[in-house]
Length: 89
Image 1 (cartoon, rainbow, N blue to C red):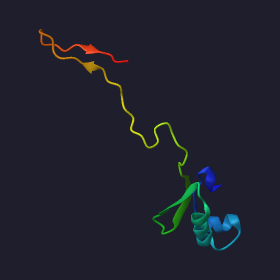
Image 2 (cartoon, rainbow, N blue to C red):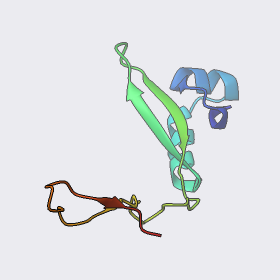
Image 3 (tube, rainbow, N blue to C red):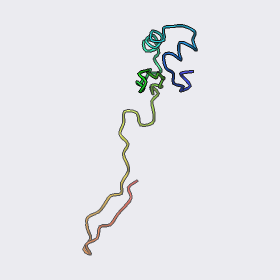
Image 4 (spheres, rainbow, N blue to C red):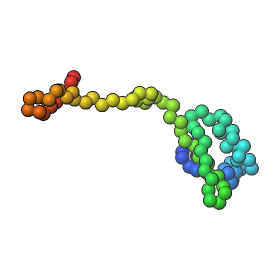
């Protein structure tokens, strides 16, 4: 259920899984999951909310590269004072 994006407090994890050590469960998840990162945030009530976020390990088209835009060349200004643009191929 956590892999589907749902978020749970430790009390909810204990109730759903029917055991009483959610913090150990979260600790084990952190240690053994390689495709997900366990995220948490402390709520105003003092409880922590836990969820999983996928780690993007799949390479994308621009992974590790900078994307460059092909810009037109600008020639020197002509005698009229305006520059001429030309496309490079």
